[in-house]
Length: 175
Image (cartoon, rainbow, N blue to C red):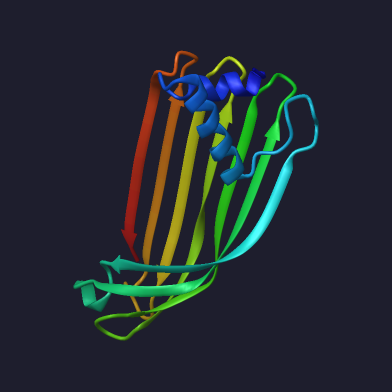
């Protein structure tokens, strides 16, 4: 098994190796993992995908809050790079493009901007970390109608697949 396979198998937390290899292969295909370790070429893809969501904006409707139906697009950029030591580094970023919506209660119009980035790093020794940063603005008309949310999640696994760090912070603000 390659070093990259060893790193993935240690992340499966006791799952049979054959199942783990299958799961690792599926995950690798979904997130766009590129060449085998030792090759210096990484893989970068960029796609535009439709975006639809309904979000609650607590600042809207004079502080009463309302649900806002959002539509638009997201730019999805996937990047994967194996390193010379058998590690794997994967980043997937989502960026809002032309996302807007209408409040279900007031009919007010909103613009949304922001995005998220998900980073996965694994070493050939089996240690790994995963970080997600999500910043999203829903901007309404008038004073106090803007909503900001920011989320940070960070999880680190040691070589024995035991979780050693878990950080989850969320900030929410009305402006």
